[in-house]
Length: 82
Image (cartoon, one colour):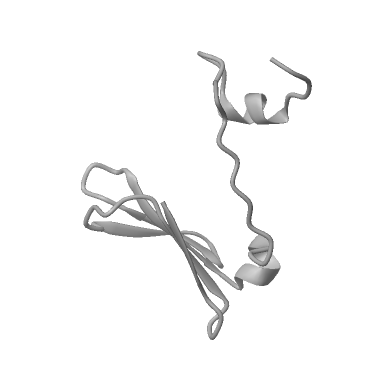
């Protein structure tokens, strides 16, 4: 994954793969996703990134172990040790 920030346009581009883009979908006024021929996410563009995505403060966490059969939003919201 690559995150590119273009200060001159305040745009963030998050690239998830190098696949060819078949379709771009507008999710909201400032958020676009690019999909490959199989419907998989290739990249995401965030316009007005400083305001909308707090791009000035980016961090990366790698989760060592995920709980099976539990949605990621539930895992991320839990506190305490596992």
